[in-house]
Length: 257
Ligand SMILES: Cc1cc2nc3c(=O)[nH]c(=O)nc-3n(C[C@H](O)[C@H](O)[C@H](O)COP(=O)(O)OP(=O)(O)OC[C@H]3O[C@@H](n4cnc5c(N)ncnc54)[C@H](O)[C@@H]3O)c2cc1C
Image 1 (cartoon, rainbow, N blue to C red):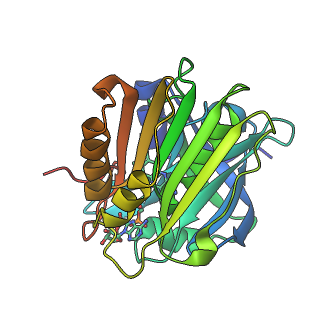
Image 2: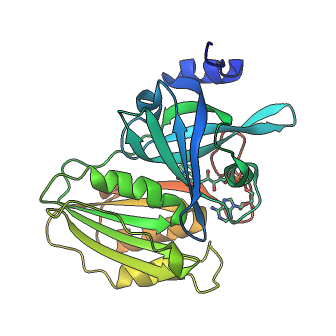
Image 3: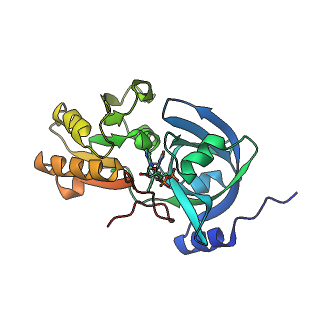
């Protein structure tokens, strides 16, 4: 039996982006923390779809005003042998992406375009500072796993629930510092938690790179704080993943105006 074909607009989009489109099969869907589900997708082209550490895929999330709506999720890990990749998806809110993740049954299929994303690990950095929210944990941990020894990974992540403090399993040669900041009922756009995490962190003397992925206002405030602390623009990679109070646009990015 031949594999189901992706939606024609997914084929067109993938061609335009130089990416791959596919209809992948859900092979696992597990709750891994109060906020996150881990969903594993299988497809012959899984390795191509998953791209490099830091990259993401676009999932079909229904139609809206006659337009296809897509949602973007970073690849947490990829298994080249089984041709599967895993996403960690936040599902505590109401939105087409989160609702799909909550309900996706093993054996069901989903239209995927990937890889997307232009923020790789900086190969020249001695230390890597990952700052953001639970939505970023999948991207952060896959990127950290790509750090060459002896490197250093520092995570400053705000979590809405103490049981969201999922930890990575990195090689012994990688130095790890993890600061999980309890959101403590603050709004996700309130940068106070990330600010206190950053204040608790002393920059090592050698060269570092910061990756800021998370809620729109929170990561922008974190960037200003890092510039104030002496990092240069070139040492900071920022990507807003979502925006509090506003659904992402149909192409999967937060609205910027
Ligand atoms: C490059 C990229 C990579 C991403 N990687 C991941 C990832 O690995 N894992 C992941 O979970 N998300 C990731 N995101 C974020 C995810 O795409 C957004 O959260 C998206 O808005 C979810 O779509 P939705 O249909 O569930 O909600 P939407 O329809 O976009 O929004 C509906 C409502 O829910 C709110 N909302 C949206 N997201 C959240 C949230 N996380 N927490 C609380 N409220 C929210 C909105 O403000 C809005 O009020 C990524 C985004 C980008 C751009």
